[in-house]
Length: 89
Image 1 (cartoon, one colour):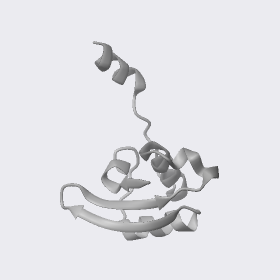
Image 2 (image 1 turned 90 degrees about the horizontal axis):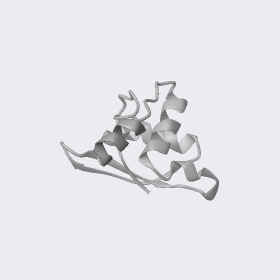
Image 3 (image 1 turned 120 degrees about the vertical axis):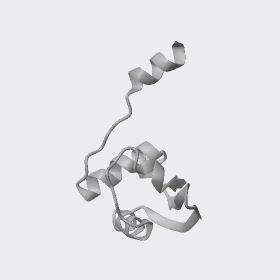
Image 4 (image 1 turned 135 degrees about the vertical axis):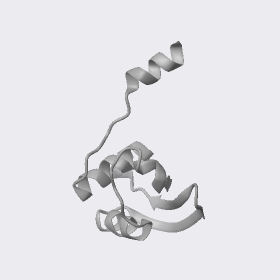
């Protein structure tokens, strides 16, 4: 699964290079298959090998929750009700 590091920052307050983030995830059991820099605006993308027992990491939200727990950072969940109100008018 490909994870854009900038998107993770929307849910956590991590401020580490993508290489360090990849190391933290690898030590937690999420293997990093590749790392690429798209451009300055989009930032870094990590490709994760998610094992079947870690299904919660198959989304940016799940990976952000895992990263925030591993790094002792605050996790900010998106406001689902605001999303529904915007969607349904």
